[in-house]
Amino acid sequence: MKVHGRSSLWFDDGSPVRAASAIAPFGSGWLIAQDDATHAAWWQADVVTRLRLFPPVDGHDLFAEEDGTKRLKPDLEAAWAIDAGSTSGVLLLGSGSLPNRTRVALVTEGPTQPRVTVADLTSLYDDVARALGVPRARRNLEGACVVDDRLRLFQRGDRRRGVLDASIDVGLAALLAAVSGDGDPAEVPVGDVRRYDLGPLGGRDANADSVPLAITDAVALTVVPCWSRQSRRTLRTRSRTVRSPPRRSRSSRVRKWSRGRVCLRSRAAPSRRSKGSRS
Image 1 (tube, rainbow, N blue to C red):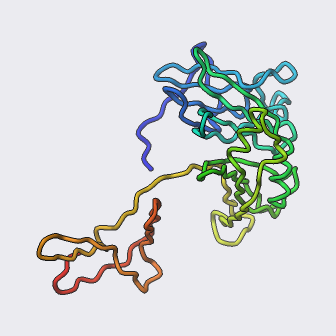
Image 2: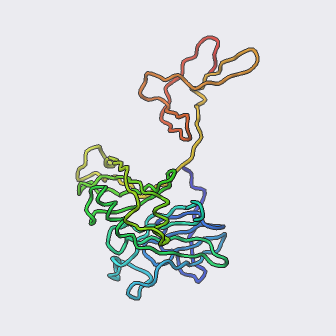
Image 3: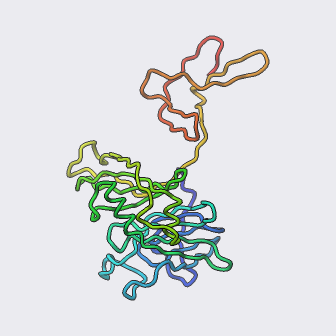
């Protein structure tokens, strides 16, 4: 990953964008979720427009711990672009860490202004917590991405309280139907739980000096299959050159590759040159 530059974001009225807890492409720009506000930021070229997602909560649109209003925030922690049939836009997801954080907002393009549809999915969030085996007080969904016809939600772990990082899939079509009001949130299919032990920073064993690692966001990547120059073998024939994938090395530190869309790389084992072939 390479950072090409950085800059501060300000709304057109001069106020700052307070947070970027999630970001997704929308229209001709980007939709940025603020976890401590009732509105998002729509960033287009050099203009950042405020987009209201929720009505004020007890008269507040901004929330902060020093004001005693932190527990009131909608806590939007995940956003992803949706392009499923007749539904195209961005879905923003509350963390579910408190009962008031189980709302989602679907933002779609309208004739002149974006449309916002808000849904309370408490029953779905409860189903997710039960399937993950975590109490509602420890539920904390911090990331999401679309995988085929499912939405994969990522639970942020808390090792000190015995909660591992995990992911769980929900049916995307049924979820969108529940958001639009055409379906029941309690009927959204939930399953395929996966758990991840990321370990701590500062040693494999958790101790007072180590920092537990946890999932705080997720994104789906599309990568083409790849071979390394070092491990590529070229077989020459009379009429053409045929390149084949490398032979599997006995070493555990090999380059792993897939015939599908994803290629995961680790350190490659040194290739051996043989007579009549090139690396």
